[in-house]
Length: 180
Image (cartoon, rainbow, N blue to C red; front, top):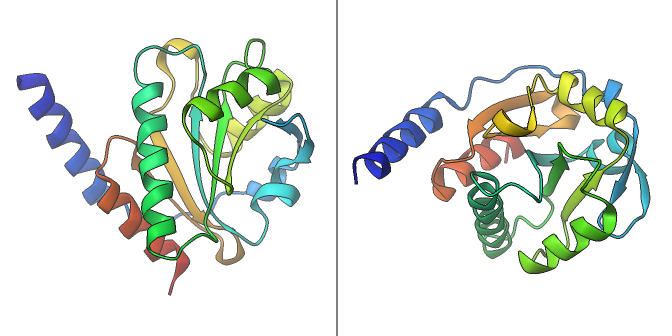
């Protein structure tokens, strides 16, 4: 009970900190990745450029926080679609490219009932490390970030929020990022 209360308090505190906008040189992350269908994409020009995006970092073999964060991502996508914000792109970046092949990501996405507009990506370790570095994320498998990065690439506005935040808080930050 105490741990659930602590998680709730921490999530609320993290949500309150969101809204501190920063610039992230995401153009420098134009590296080759592969999505869950095996399609080769350029991370920046193919997935991020000109869009409002929510990015998280995960791996399919995680049994701790990743399933919870992925579930939150799914709930976020459902709420965004319900509110008519299907133009927001969700991107899950694997931090375990050795095991998270496109086929593995596709099975994982199917289990999570992912809808169009949510892309899982993997690639070679150096390219994924470049993405992580540009987003300022530390992601060793045993202690990877629980942050979501929300941004409006066209406006150069990015912020971070705990992936443990309430979906309503995440939606609010996405709305702020959209600037509408």
